[in-house]
Amino acid sequence: MDMNIILYLSVALVAIAIFIFVISVTKTLRAVNETLTSVSSTMSGLENQLEDVTKETAMLLHKTNVL
Image (tube, rainbow, N blue to C red; front, side):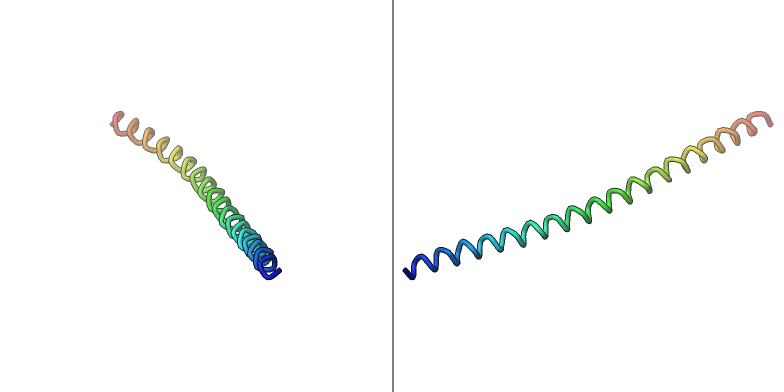
């Protein structure tokens, strides 16, 4: 009888540990998702800025060649 109680408690403890692990992984993945979303937004902004700089550089080179 004592072995059954120990077995059930062990199974319950493993189930609780797995549950805590799943919650921890879920929180981590959500944080990674937020970070990647932020990086994506930043990269889009940088792409737009780089296009503007490229256009301005091309215009400046054209004006320099004209001189």
